[in-house]
Image 1 (cartoon, helix red, strand yellow):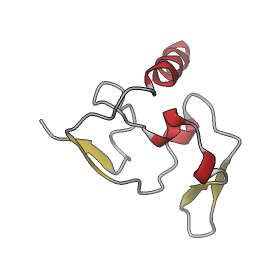
Image 2 (image 1 turned 180 degrees about the horizontal axis):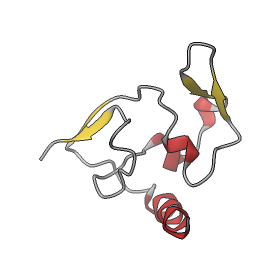
Image 3 (image 1 turned 90 degrees about the vertical axis):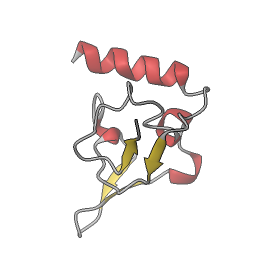
Image 4 (image 1 turned 90 degrees about the horizontal axis):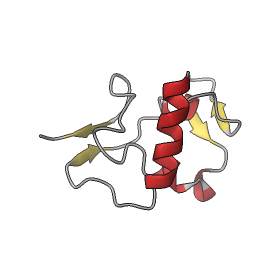
Length: 85
């Protein structure tokens, strides 16, 4: 759990930096990034199983830019974003 909190703090401080140029893809509404390290209070679940953000238009930068770099990408198995080598 401690590593997840450290990752969240790092992502928050580095969110002012630009997204890596080798990031490709798009959000597929898996909701996994919104559960790090705990489930976000703004995360909602539709009946079809997809997740959505109830404050999407005003969400914080660390949410908007996740994953910003390959090193910060800790939800690789489910995320729609990928980093090209």
